[in-house]
Length: 371
Image (cartoon, rainbow, N blue to C red; front, side):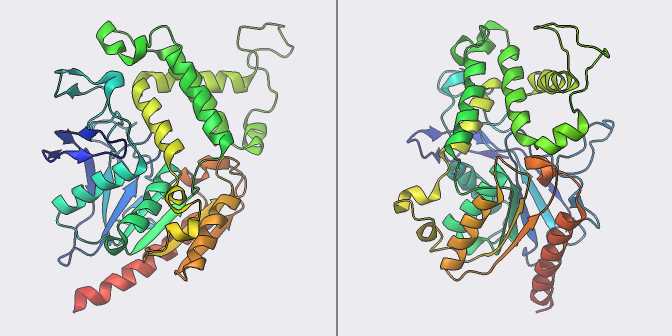
């Protein structure tokens, strides 16, 4: 969907003539009260569920959660997946033409924030005729967007479901993002972000950035169980410093190679900064409780015990701030071995929590439809 009205950004810049790619699943009811917005994390997109015809490898990134009969049941809910500005899956981003120059934005694409993304999502909902969302749900960076919806659009969201997320990034997390960005910008093919004009892609930097990120998404237990110290091709060490020796090295290089083929380097820089900048308490002197003072939604938070990038303690900070404001909040801490990636995987307890929450939301909607 194209938007002619300029989008003011937190940085002071303005995004003109932008497009948002989105997909919907299920049907919007007559009262327009059953819409659920799904917010994506760093490298995901608007393609939340299902498979594109003729492409068996195109399964949506949250297909195990969203669909008919699944925890977020599309027989009951109208689900919206949207790709945020600055990403590289169709919405206006660095690879698109800058209206001011008629050249690709490249590094000139303005810096965006969670708040800018939520503003863009709110405009999309308005265009779809939805004045209030039954729920906003997201994991990781998507969870930050869900929280921002509750803070800045309190009358337009009834339930906020934030999974494996945090009220801001720790210094360690910002450090990981910075190392990944340095890998990209120091790639000789980066060309100060204008690599499209040179007909190249900084794949080496993207590979390293993805490898760094992937390490942080997995738990030590998962790595040990899946790879251990297994050698890839031999029963004895080959005593090499540059070739692949261990299975974990092979896995990380494979993930890096895949990522470098489909993700845009400038988008990676932008989106890691989106993560860095999110801090709703900053405008309230660091007081997170004050940041949620205007929230009115009912909250469901979920964390995972082995998620060391967004550990349960960070979710408990949010829970405390919500309780300080006497808000309706439920919290589930799941003992799962998968690390941060657990929010994308199948876990009966985790999916059970979400199924129960959406059944409760559906029961709220049903009496409205009967009136």
